[in-house]
Image (tube, rainbow, N blue to C red; front, side, top):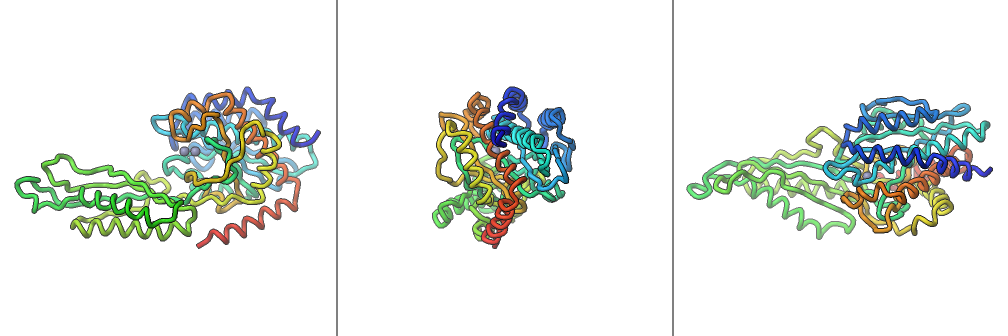
Length: 402
Ligand SMILES: [Zn+2]
Ligand SMILES: [Zn+2]
């Protein structure tokens, strides 16, 4: 039997248990670094299906599940995400990403079992805390979790099927302005208005937008802006994110935003405490995603073979940021999106949360898993292909460097 049929049949055979697993995650949304239930459900499922599981692998809610045959090389890593958003649950559909990762692992394992002469390792890597600057993958890279991986692949649910969505480099920061309180009517000239500094910074960022490249993004919120109108605010705070399609474009944009934050302090006479880091100690920089061209061409070929009924492939557009970008800088990677609903709902909306549990979303997820497993099989069995993957990785990384 052709390997694509083995992979396809295995994943369809497991459709119900995979759906049940995904439903469990969806019903119990957990936010960054608190994915205890998801960690336990996924590791239990993979262990039951013959993987060697390392629970709490380097991080409390990360895991590694390995299936190895022969001397174990090459090494294909498929990525699971499973964190949710505060308030709106699985509005990014990470329950489906987990389903794709587990299903792709099962498909590759079945292909290996049917071909005992083939050597290779498939690792399902559970990476927590993608949302809201958690940077679980960045921490896992630093801890060596990707050592020895030849490729890393995942697929993300979305409103559209995109092969290489524009995943931007981003950095997050905070600016705290300190002024001086005074009575706003009796002696306002004695005050130093920290809210004015925050407003000046916010509006200067808005003006800067016109002078940036079309695919750059900046957004800010004023998180503190004073207490009462009759007190000149002595403290204000902004939280902001700056994004560009590459680290090369991000660096000068970040410099301009830094200048804006400083000038708002100078013009109002406030003190400024500017930090590029997340206040809760998570990761402040997500790299742009380098979609490996060789892997992507194969993925598209396999996707088209398995899933013409899951909608057209649309042109790539600017999309979001993810710590998968950081993995793509150290291992050849892909991160295509797959369409989960005919109603074109976008991620991070309550409508997407609902769509992420509909039957067609799971069918599309299984299709993505089959395509990923098939690319994985090509990596394990086609030396020439893997060499090309590695060559294009080096070339694309050199192009991205600054
Ligand atoms: Zn998200
Ligand atoms: Zn997401």
